[in-house]
Length: 216
Image 1 (tube, rainbow, N blue to C red):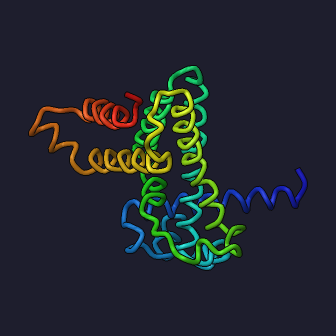
Image 2: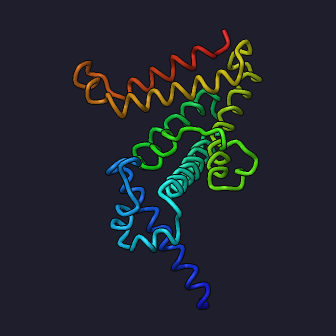
Image 3: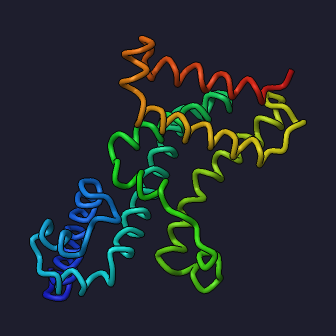
């Protein structure tokens, strides 16, 4: 390995170390309460070094969000490739379970992805090649997969053709996010007060929603 290659490798390792430190700080303190000083301390670098890689904690936020989208896309595509012969309903449920698994394993990335508030400037053409544009591009991957599942389900008669496909997609999406919120905030309460596990609620919840779009 040449000198330039070694330096580039070291630079990438340092960059990843900073992102990893930011993930931990954002989880522990929340994005709003975190500072670049906190990230520098966690990464064991000077703040000057942090700024030589990232201009702001917002830029680090986008990096974490992009990393999250790439990981969830890889997980979804892997799991769906294993059940390519299953029904579209089963594929949609599998996608949902991927997000629940991802949320448990990578809370910082999941929170960054779900908490982001869309801004008008995000949709300007000049932003498409930026880190924000890359986040949107990767964020559309699982939505596109879900749209294809719905379209195939309608085409094969598994799902009703009387409901707008895009409405189906975002109804499914909102249901999934609602389940994840329930798991995150109310799991202990539901388990202790009603003796119901999250696994039971997830199974029933998916079945209720899927039944609502099936062909009669």
